[in-house]
Amino acid sequence: MAIEYQKGTSQLHRLDARTKLLMFVGFTVAAVVIVDPILMAIIFLSLYWLGTQAVDRQLLNQNLKVLVMVFLTFSLFQILFFTPKDSHFLFYLIPFTEHIPVTVQGLVRGMAVFFRFFSVVLSVHLMLYSTPPVELALTITERGERKFSRGELLVTAAIGLVIFISALPSLANGSNSIKFLSSLSPISQNLIIVVGSLIVAFLIQKIVGRGLPPEMGVALMLGFSTVGILTKQTQKITDAQKARGYDVAPKNVFQRVKVLTALLIPIFLATMERSQDISVAILSRGFDYNISKRTFRREFKFKRNDYLFMSVMLTIIIGGMLMNYFGVGNFTEQAILKLIG
Image (tube, rainbow, N blue to C red; front, side, top):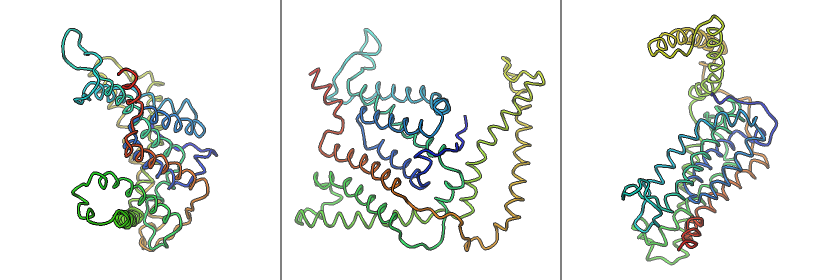
């Protein structure tokens, strides 16, 4: 089922479009950093609760339930094939043989993988459900020269902090990539890494923050907004064929191909007609005139809730990185091994 923007007044709807785009990026990074299944389950349930406040629960479940078997398959592969040398053996999947061992580590990591995938996909769903396509396109569209705002400064500092913390394990292990720092004092080492992290974060922010050309932004906006319309149009055509007594799901394979052709031709023609209408509408508004000097009616500004939401995401990411740094990133696995060992 297509993911279409749903109007609402929830906290998620009131967030800035850039915040929701950063939500997807942030929870994707968190899914990579956090390896404990309980923490990932808490993140997923929190996102799900946030989604139920913004979108109808039945609609949200309808789009998510089709992915359960896919993510369970990914988790099963993790359970079956994640067998490190020091893993705690439980049993063999094939009885009376020594094939496909199942370990404690495999089960724990498999659960974590399941919630990882679901958290990332759910963050995408929530972003698309609660953000109008035009706002989502404007967030990634180039707007010419702009002053370095307070929000961009905070985002740069947050990126720099994440880069700095990710560099700490390499510094502690004496990695060859930063071997030249070993002759310096600890204060000098940390100062150099902080400055380098901020420089890299500034470059990332400037490159990513520059945005796409307006033509690509409009194309993305039309793509986002058209998916839901085409889905409804397809359903209408299918219902019209059913009303005429046409069997749209025959058991015979050859008959099903013929039915598919009868459905695709009107869908294709309707899509082409809509594309022509959109093209005329764009040209009549003079979109192709002096694109580089375009102005924008909508100006995005971060508010208190945006800063609060981004602070929570940053805390989750940094907390996960610090837990991994201090060796307690997968406390569930450690607790189970201690209990049975």
